[in-house]
Length: 232
Ligand SMILES: NC(=O)c1ccc[n+]([C@@H]2O[C@H](COP(=O)([O-])OP(=O)(O)OC[C@H]3O[C@@H](n4cnc5c(N)ncnc54)[C@H](OP(=O)(O)O)[C@@H]3O)[C@@H](O)[C@H]2O)c1
Image (cartoon, rainbow, N blue to C red; front, side, top):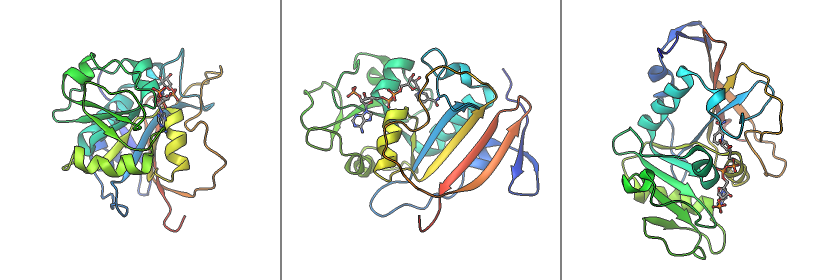
């Protein structure tokens, strides 16, 4: 399917744009670790899943956005629950690394994600030994701040970390103050059900964000880019 026309409606002036020009932007490195940009799609009523997966919420522009961010970033961070639910395979982006966060180590390391050489695990010291590359951070649970800092060694040429969820990992990233940017696609649907929000399991937070841009396409999908406001 062809990607539809995207119009930027913020900042002014409104005009037709490409994903590349909107997302290939400067991301200043926070002290001691790479910038983390989270990307999620949610329905208008706030659910991140339909029938246990995100696919039915997206469209061609949303899928292209994920590809664009993968290519720009060079490294992906994703939770084991998402890899299990969505059946992650070998990425089509050459050289891309995909770090899978798990406390249990219960991840299928025989899948193409790992046999392709793209995938690696992010585990606490206490997790069982594994036959694939693993970053160890934290004693009995993954220490995300240390893990994110260690991604510099895994992919020294990466420009930033593109985080693909899911909601539980997002909650831990938010609690640790590690979300520098949120690329949120609002899918024009009411889906009801009990699906998780973008962030699950975090304590109450009061983090201020700034709207960097707002795009809309011909199918009423809204693509927002939010960045952490300087000074919190
Ligand atoms: N709409 C979207 O954009 C979007 C994006 C991604 C996912 N999803 C959907 O979200 C659902 C999965 O949700 P989820 O919240 O369960 O996914 P998740 O955050 O990807 O996975 C949770 C699992 O990841 C590991 N994990 C997460 N945070 C961790 C931390 N701080 N330290 C150590 N391990 C951590 C744990 O794995 P272990 O159990 O192995 O210890 C945990 O059980 C799926 O239905 C998927 O389709 C939607």
